Structure formats: C-alpha cells, structure tokens
Length: 175
Image (tube, rainbow, N blue to C red):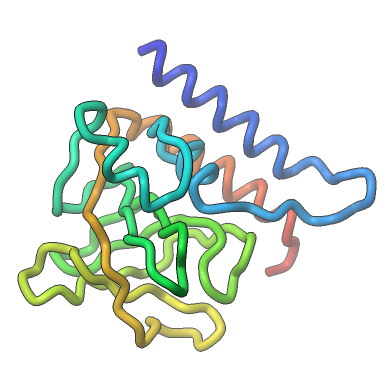
C-alpha cells in the first residue's frame, strides 16, 4: 500500500511539474521512461530498454497486455535507448491503446490512448506497429519489443492518467 501511495505522490509531483511554466516560458520536454514510471507506478530507472532486465524478480513480466502494464521496446540504431509505453486499454488480442511520451512526431510530448498493433507472427507482442501522428495512421515500421512489465498500481494509473490529460491540456491548449 505504501508503494502505491508513494507512486501516486511521485506521479502527482511529476504532473504538477509539467503544468508549471518555467521562468523563460519554455515547454517541458518529456522522456518516455520518467513519464512511464510516474504514469504506471513501476519504479525502474535508466534507459527504457533496460527496464526489461531490471524488472526480473521485482515485477511480473509476460507477453499479454494488461491495463497499467508497461510495454518495453528493444533498443535499435534509430531508438538507442528503447522506449516504454503504458497500456491504457486492451481492445483485442492484437490491438491495445497506450499512453506514452516522446514518440515519433510527438517528440517530448504526451500522447494519450494511441493504438498499438501486435504484428508478431506468433501473436506474442514481440513486434508492434504504433500510431504515428504525422501521418495520422499506424506507422509502417514494426518495432521489436521484450513484452510487458506488470504492476499492482492499476488504480493509481487511472488517477495519474486523468492528471496527465489535464497537464497536457495546460501545456498544449487547443491541440
């Protein structure tokens, strides 16, 4: 229970920090890992791709998406630190919605409830295609993933999601 409360407080602090303008009026640039940590309650640190191995023995892991779980993308030459995204909804066995930061054409920004499609041959979420805002559709590139890290903080994720929506509206009004 203390971990859940601690994660909720940390998430609120992050979101409050996002909503506060800087002295120079510059926008905050978000990275995926700190955002996913606050949004999901999963307390892992460092490069996104390293989360998979860090989670061993600390969190459950698997190939089935669950709301509140974090999808971990492998590092590539075009994505050297990997990527993490928090599952917000499971629509089918091959389609989910995620909320994440710093993806593609939305560099440094939060994207809420974007579509991710499992393109793996074995339906194990080892390769996915992700909604790409600049083209208004699912991207054409399939990205390799490790799978999902599970957290017991699903209730916190829902509350943090609402805070993230409000913070994004403050940072990017009318978008």
